[in-house]
Amino acid sequence: MPTNEEAAQVAGILLIVLDILTVAGRFYSRWVTKLGFRWDDWTILMALITGILPGALTMYASTVSATGPAAASNHNPDYVFTPEDIVYTKITFSTSVLYFFITSITKLSILLLLHRLFSISDRFRMHIYIAEAAVVAFWFSATIADCLNCIPLEWTWKNGNADPRYCINFNTFWLGTGIAESIIDLWILLLPIFMVSSLHLERNKRFGVAGIFLMGGFVLFSGIAKVVLSYQPNSREPDFSRGTLWTTVHMYTGILCANLPTARPLLNQIAHFASVIGSRMSMLSTSRGGKRWYSLSGRQSSSRSDDVSGEEGKGKGDFALPMWSLNSYRGP
Image (cartoon, rainbow, N blue to C red; front, side, top):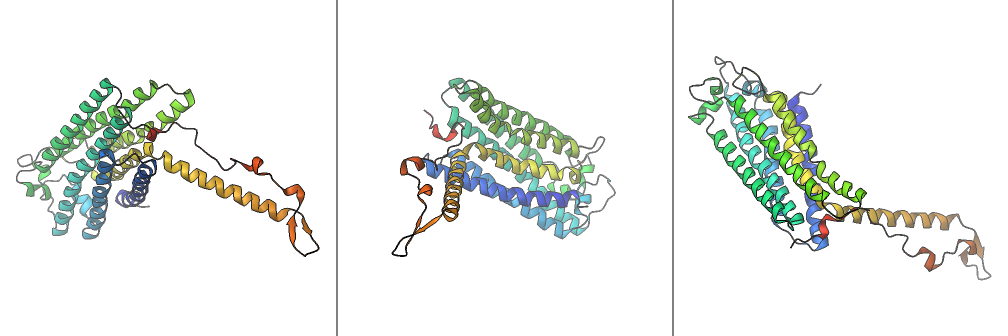
């Protein structure tokens, strides 16, 4: 049975591939609809490029020290780190700094997209600005506290987290940042729901649009799961070996869900292409199955019963998803 670290690596690779595909589809949709590229697109691209680094670093760290995960979560003050454990801990420390950047820039991308789609309301814009300020404040405060969790910093990889003389209680820090991040995620999740409920749309279309944004609820769930599994009561160090899978899922599904509202033009083109191919295959099958008539010249023609007038076939390849296009709105 694979360990949590191995499962996290597999999940990370699969989700990174999906993130690359959805980000590429996002930029393609922007190009096809001629809406142009804005900050919400560039920030999610930045999150994707930066998000590849933790996966690569974690895979490299696992090859450096087989005991690294256990050492990183060890809260015994008498435990002595091996040189390999120190290298592993340095690498995982750098990924924790990257984690706060990636999740924060992803949240900013979602907020910038919401501003792009629903900026017709002054009150909604104010909520967006407040949420953006909260995200930036969370990013800076969490990153600074993470970088100064031990003074001097080298005690981070000397098992100093178990020694209150040098380091803060990282278990409490991880719990606190996890709770703050979950509150921000819930806030961002509710913002578009309130706005969609006020749109003048048919009920099924309104539910369809709201459903796209509600898929971000899985990001909220994964964020709560990583905190609950990592937290160790009466300890100064969280158990990262238990929470690493959900930490990885939380980081990469955020990028994935940020691209879903922009995917409609690409999905329409794929559906149209599939419809055209299916229609042509059906016509080819009918043509091959019809009767053949031979003229005196030896030429072959289809049965009259198989003839289809141009008027009857007109428009049969047309296809459109019955969903309101979020990409058709250009803002004020």
